[in-house]
Amino acid sequence: MTPQPSPEAGAAVKAADRAHVFHSWSAQELIDPLAVAGAEGSYFWDYDGRRYLDFTSGLVYTNIGYQHPQVVAAIQEQAATMTTFAPAFAVEARSEAARLVAERTPGDLDKIFFTNGGADAVEHALRMARLHTGRPKVLSAYRSYHGGTQQAVNVTGDPRRWASDSATAGVVHFWAPFLYRSRFYAETEEQECARALEHLETTIAFEGPSTIAAIILETIPGTAGIMPPPPGYLAGVRELCDKHGIVLVLDEVMAGFGRTGTWFAADLYDVVPDLMTFAKGVNSGYVPLGGVAISAEIAATFATRPYPGGLTYSGHPLACAAAVATINVMEEEGLVEKAAALGASVVGPGLRELAERHPSVGEVRGTGMFWAVELVRDRETREPLVPYNASGEANAPMAAFAAAAKKAGLWPFVNMNRTHVVPPLNTSEAELKEGLAALDAALSAADEHVR
Ligand code: PLP
Image (cartoon, rainbow, N blue to C red; front, side, top):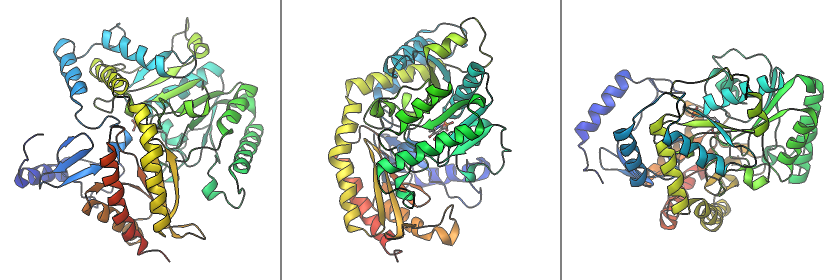
């Protein structure tokens, strides 16, 4: 562990941040970012010596925790031998990372186009789909998040994200399954699956199947609430895509690389997309990296016809070396299996037990190390604990929840009326239990706001 820096050093970091850093998704003068002094494993700490158990994995990306020595060493070694090299060349770290990813992606998704992160992976996947089909439209789900760049934000199904970007022509949203909030239309998973597939089929018919290039879906929607789809839904979407020659893009930027207790969430549903986007967990976010895994059929479209797209840093050697080391660590430490096992034996049962005791918990759902707790004012009506996109006074109940969690030593992921439990995959059983105990205290603060 690095020596504890002084509060004065923290104050200087904070002052420079406040003066010059423009933060994502924020009103610049209303935020108060914590100055972080260091991080290791599943913990980070500030300059005043306060230590937090990280149940957020950063932005759900540090799948192997902070400062894993094997990955740090691999980055150092790559920096010493070949810090960077342009994408047109065959470079060992890049070739090896592509091979390791391709060996783990489902089906024949064996060609890897590397990007700098998730949003540009989505941009490129949709471009590939449009060029492959010669069709203009893309269908995507409400309650989805696909990234902050122009096309990615347009396919994102959340109006909070659309404010400043004019809509791209040819993006149509549909209502994907979410039983907890579809209850006036469906009472069971089977009914919700049927409702959502019928709705999608109708949308395709009204839009005109021959105008639709792609359907893009997060295999398990993450940012919008970790909503595992009912059994049969993704297979049904796959069938509709096959019937109409539509490219199926599964976005696994958040759900991929072990988060769900399988290498990819698609493995849980036995569905093979035509294109799959990834980022985050591919190298635990140690160096920015994302990509698109491409099926043999779509790769063939660009066998003799140039693909009109690229990035200066595509397959950056430092990022790829981090990916190779991360995937090797995940194999050596059995982290995918560990996420599945501890998700089923500790996190799931622990959260359900909390749900029984805390009236503010409306629903617990998830798998592996990918869980959401939906907080409500009223379990009967399912009214969310805070209104959609609440801020200021309206958000006081969630602010109280977060403050109580931090006081108990836990850094929680909070989004609207939910907390997501998304710790690094190598968080130990004892650490998970410590986090659940802190959540217990935080939920007591939320209970105060229940009707
Ligand atoms: N797609 C999904 C499913 C995501 O969860 C995210 C980020 O959270 C993105 C795309 C965008 O990734 P990035 O922020 O790396 O551009």
